[in-house]
Image 1 (tube, rainbow, N blue to C red):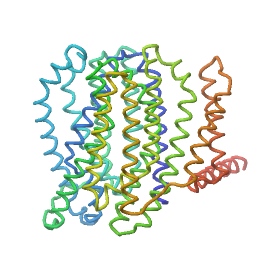
Image 2 (cartoon, rainbow, N blue to C red):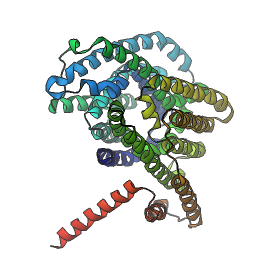
Image 3 (cartoon, rainbow, N blue to C red):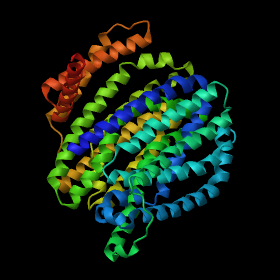
Image 4 (spheres, rainbow, N blue to C red):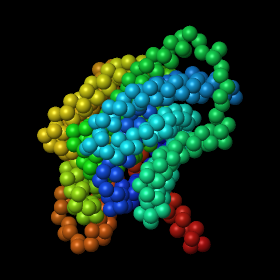
Length: 499
């Protein structure tokens, strides 16, 4: 778990710094500077481009994660793996262009009245799809080189700095909205370019084709893994992004803007899980290749505990301060209160499952993972169709919570049946009870008039109560060891300063 913890901590630092920037951008600046329709446009463009970008990857993200160990050979440019991936994804991009041009008339006619901004700027999907495809590809390749944190730095940190600059330029009048949306699109390509430059610098970027390395058996495996990986990956991305498209479809772009802003707070819960899953997937793949099921079991078990701690802790910080969140947001966003709650619950459920999805996806049962993801996306779409017309944006959030619960049950049942993995224990219940008790204590705290001061004090107390309780109960050895390392480093800094 050493490399996982190191990369998780490093990636989490970038994610948290990015979360601070995202908070400034999404929660503080954009709601006061942009209209709800303009916010909805940026969110919808990205959501649609991510969905099509995953399709355009042609399943090579899964091929990279699952089969790259068979190509790994730095001295021989990893046997031409990257060149095959780039060419395949180029074909995928052409496929996405065909889909875009065939669906463009429908997208424009369907949105010209209720979402005119989307109809006006729909053509920006083309560069956004291209950037998305090659970011996903290069990031997966870089992760398999055991560097999961650099992609996080580029996407979660650097991109948000660039977005902040664009927002300020718009606010100061140096950019009109058209200029801003062009700037926003170009900024989205920076992480892709950054990964390419980094791989060149590390001498890991080679376009040399070595097709003779691919045996008929390996070729067959690549096609099979790619096909089912495409289904799984596409379904996973659709699940995360389809709700914003459906909110726009059933409501309008303004409602999408409100939903996207509230949705942001709920997704903060996923930050530590993203880093752990990114590096954990490469370790799991290697362990499965070596038939080292004990390592897989250990990673799975620890991931459910560590990710549940992080999820409950972050949810406490968000929901204990929900009254402060809506003091800083304009009145137009007040309908998003329950969206934050139910999206938060959905992501707690997601985090509680740990790396279960990655284990299934990268095991010999990857075909069945595609079926599970197909059921999951069906649940998401059906629940959204049923609940959005009745409950609006809150219905979309509840749909996510219901779907994630059923999805978690499917993943848990599958691993229990096929591998006898059962990672849950009394510790998970203690974490949940500690979280509920901590929130109950936060309700007793008096509300200060100054929302900034109230947020700082309330957040500090919640963190101390929840964190120290779990620390002394020794729920997670990884958490305790990380805290001890931080304390040791702080002591060394103090000692060095006193010399």
